[in-house]
Amino acid sequence: MGINILGTGCCLPEQKLSNNDFCRFIDTNDEWIRTRTGITERPMSGWEPTWYLGLNASMQAVERAGIDPKEIGLVIGCSVSSDFLTPSMASIIQHKIGAVNAAAFDINAACTGFVYALDTARRFLDTDSSLKYVLVVAAENLSRFVDFTDRSSCILFGDGSAAAVIERSEKLYSSHLASDGSGANLLFARSMDVAEEIKTDKEFETEFADMPLHKLYQNGKEVYKFAVQALPKSFELAAEKAGITIDDIDWFIPHQANVRIIETAAKKLGVPMDKFIITLDHYGNTSSSSIPLALNEALEKGIIKRGQKLALIGFGAGLTYGGIIIEY
Image (cartoon, rainbow, N blue to C red; front, side):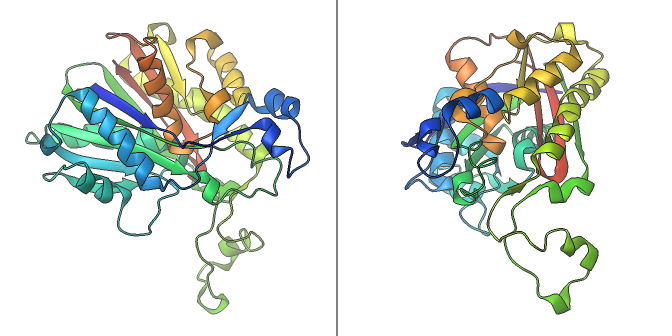
């Protein structure tokens, strides 16, 4: 069983930061950022909470799907930057859109979050015949914990949200999800410290000991090595399950982390870059929101057509990675 995407939506903060804006407080310049990342500007939240971005993206997706929110049976949120430890972002959105008959929970799989959430939604639809529609919403406010003194990482990230309403169908569907927790210390942000006397795994805690709380840390070189392997691997394993090849795919929609990662992975796959949907230049890296933002924009522009086959590929902190192949 596959899925059918009925409608998508997005919400971006009012404020945008250009590369030149960063020159005011760190030692960098527009050319350095563009040539190394492919980014020229990124949306950056001011007053907008994460749930607010997710709510507006969800309302647009529901409207475009043409359904009654009361028919939604499940809301899955994905974020690494939710406003609350509890309740879930999904529960807040579920109430505010009027999805009174829906269950709701969040997933944190970092930049692979939308892929994980979409696959989870598909599995619920497969096992519960009473479930009609699922809303999947990714929302991020990475600017809340980006370290703006780190010139190598703060330039990468943006804020935003995108959502999709899906239903079950007989269309093509295949997925592969995975994680390599040995790389947990390569990309992380601590939420709280642990007292020395109650640390249960001192070797593990030592790996994070000198890192500031509530700030994002990234080992760029090691994450790059992981990403350029994970992207093609995720696709190949999902394609193998479906019995299809690269030539069958009309569009690749990867996590928008860095254009060099996408270019290197494309060469490994032997796929031209013009088959990749790229929105990195004006969104930056929006973590779990990056894939659905790219999907939504491509649909709004009419780039993606009904019947075409898409490969959605995520990779990020955890280290998580995964790929989904669907027919739109």
